[in-house]
Structures are given as C-alpha cells and as structure tokens.
Image 1 (cartoon, helix red, strand yellow):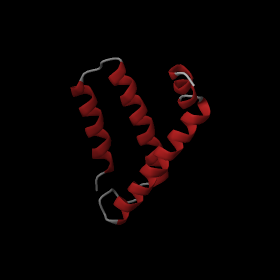
Image 2 (cartoon, helix red, strand yellow):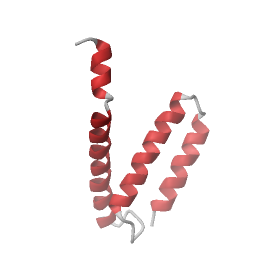
Image 3 (tube, rainbow, N blue to C red):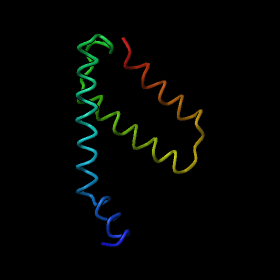
Image 4 (cartoon, helix red, strand yellow):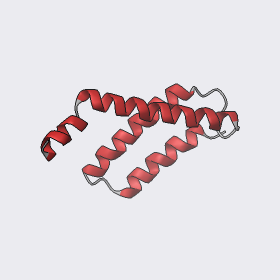
Length: 86
C-alpha cells in the first residue's frame, strides 16, 4: 500500500468517526473521574462536555494548521477550563 493510500485509509470518514468517538469516550471517562473527585463544577454532563472538548480539539488543530497565534489558543483553552472548574 502506498503512503497516499495509507493516509486515505486513516482519514476516511469511517476512520475519522471511529477516532473521534474514541476521543469522546476517553474525555467522558476522565470527566466522570474528575467530577467524582470534586474537580469539576457540579451538574456538568460528562458526555456533553466530552463532545465540546472533541470539537475544541478539532478546532484547535485547524487553528494550528492556519497558523493562528498561541496567545489566541491559550485564551480559548483558559476560557473552556474556567467554565468547568467548581
């Protein structure tokens, strides 16, 4: 298989959906643990926040590709984290 074919296989819609689902599940597990430990604001829904974090990571990856500055990205992450804290 050529490099181009391997790249296409890894970035097929099915592969991307699988990757994003696994990422969302990992976020949800970590969020449940943090919620149970009192590290997050009470009342948060781990699955909903996990979807938000997946969207954030994908948006951040896009911003990095188009060379948006680090200060913009840092302020975005700070805003999301502050909304989650107790």
